[in-house]
Length: 355
Image (cartoon, rainbow, N blue to C red; front, side, top):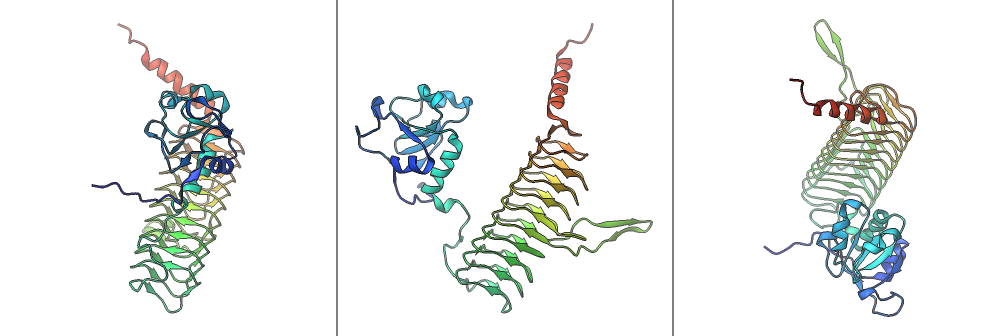
């Protein structure tokens, strides 16, 4: 079976161009020669991890765990900090930066722009004859609709947006420009901003979990709110975001949500948050700007998490958190206390039982 290049290189890039994009200083070259004018500028044609790299590749070093891999690196060039320069083989050109991961991200985006957001799975343009678009839907020029997609009456979709196969866009849903809606995603009762990426299988706008307990059982509470997703948000595969009950569920600008996240009704998430896979946010909680929630963390209903707080993986937040808090554990408590408690339990568990 031949190897498939799913993301073609935009074009080979001279090392000087890569350095300019990333704000890097070029240091060294083949056999340790100075980079300035003493050898032909090499071309970058791919990116690779340190231990799989070969000539033509670009890589980065940002973690001491990969020190051995760095010493064996065979790439053309590597982003790293100046204090790690002596670890790099002489044959590899050093690209000195303060933040190697950021530099690598900028360079990779330049080399492989098609990987920044999902494209049409049929690599087509316009509305596929196999799509079902209601005559009352409004699509701006440049919208791509793949086969099997369904777009309801009154829906509005902005220019440059891609609707994947089998995606469902409900009545009166608004989607901004340059968005990507993945295959089998469903959007109802939602207003979506510009440059939003929604990955396959995500569900936005379904009922929230609202029931009034009675002696005869649970009485369903009407969920009459919406889901509002602001600009530059990314929502992972199979994530679910319930529409509001009495107010809107809101996802703030620039927030990134991983796969398999559950966001309940009336939740308000601030700007530039990061919510990692399998996390759950119960109804009516409020998350401030720049909050980070680790994988499999949970936030109870009607709680407030202050700006810049960070919640460790597998933690359960049961009380409000102030701005800048760092917590871990279930129930969540200050991170240092949680770590000391875990270390103490580990020491006790290691002690031999008395005879």
